[in-house]
Image (cartoon, rainbow, N blue to C red):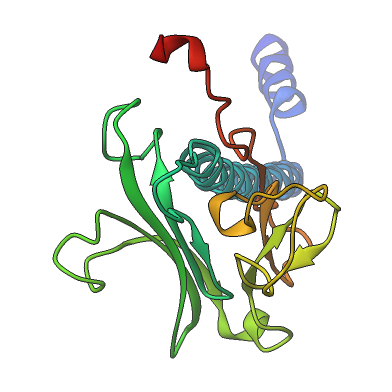
Length: 217
């Protein structure tokens, strides 16, 4: 009897009470809740980072399109190929987005307005009229209410103009070449979006090519 009694007492002493089990369950529940909350916050932060990265990549891609096509603009002797206004500019580019590099293509960048705000659009060769354009970027109403988005053109003296060619009689470096046969030094889009990727491009082909009269001999 003594041996069996000792075995029963040993089993009672080594078991878990109901209170101990409840405490363990509560602790496990609290730890699981903290882990799930931390995991949710981590996933939320990761999602925000991915969205920010996609927005930045989109802005860089749009800016690259604008720089590529605009930097390919060039001038000729025949006619004023480039015309710039507040809401659009048109010129001949050797780096059009939808045409092979090196092929002279008439391109048009324009800023259009709608109920949602203002849009940056692109067109080549005025295909199917002015309505056939690519929507490149969107500025929404809460942003465009601050200021109107428009193009500006910089001359060789560092002055910015809202139209190109500038006013009549304007000349560069006192040269006898009319400004309508030249490109601006730089083009930018004035945007109230402070954090937005800047739309600014310098143009290197803004001078008329030098004539080599030896080719005529």
